[in-house]
Amino acid sequence: MLHQLEKYLGPIRMVVFCPAKSEPAMITSSDVDKFKTHMDTNFFSALKFILPISQKMATNKQKGGRIVIVGDPMATQSTVPGMAAYACSKHALEALAMQLRAELMPHNIKVHYFLPVMMQTNFLFRQKQIYPLVTKENLKHRRTSEADYMAKKLLRGITMEEFMICGSFSITFMTTLKAQFRIAFNLCFAPIAIMLRMYEDMRVQDQMFAYRHHHLQAQEAAPRDKGRVRK
Image (cartoon, rainbow, N blue to C red; front, side):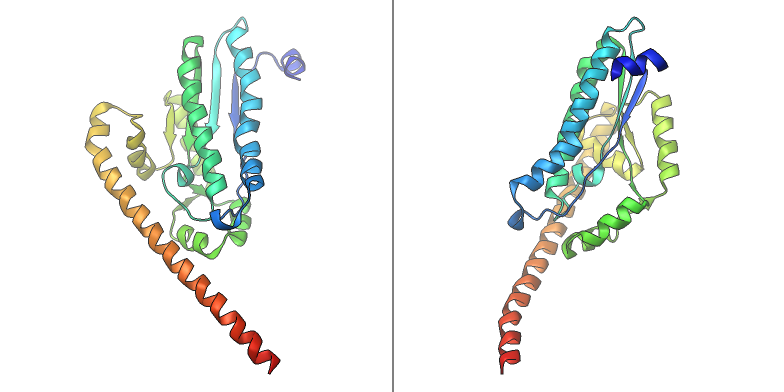
């Protein structure tokens, strides 16, 4: 297929990988298949897609090109209960982006890893309908943005030759924990980012305790309700 594409369109100079699968996956009620399907869509499909193209870019006469991978800071910079399978697949995708950058740089292949703000799309709206209550509560106050605005952010980052392109300053702020920016910037903001991450993790734990308490109350109330119906 790649040979046919290059025959009609010429050498591939840039590729953008952006598909995503996100379904509820609570650890206590999910099986391995749920994780496998997320990995197949969000990670292995990227690998099958990017490997042959990067090899083509490295060996064609006009060496070089660009590979853009779209990640999700919500999954890789924070913890959201109910999205375990999605988060694991996105962490794997982030590791792939960093490996690609290191190995393809000598071949003049630029790698860009985009971390957008949650975008107001029909996909996000549909996904929110099926999330468990604890996930909905966690996502309720998270910032969203227009898809067109995020596209402009991506194009600007590519133009500026940035590896890690962040959709907002808060994402840039938390990315200092991965040491992907200048040393002075990392040293100034990484300690604050660590404290914010610790606070976020404690808040998520409180949400999970509240969710667990609500779930136990519902289980205790169910037998009593059945008994009343029988009488």
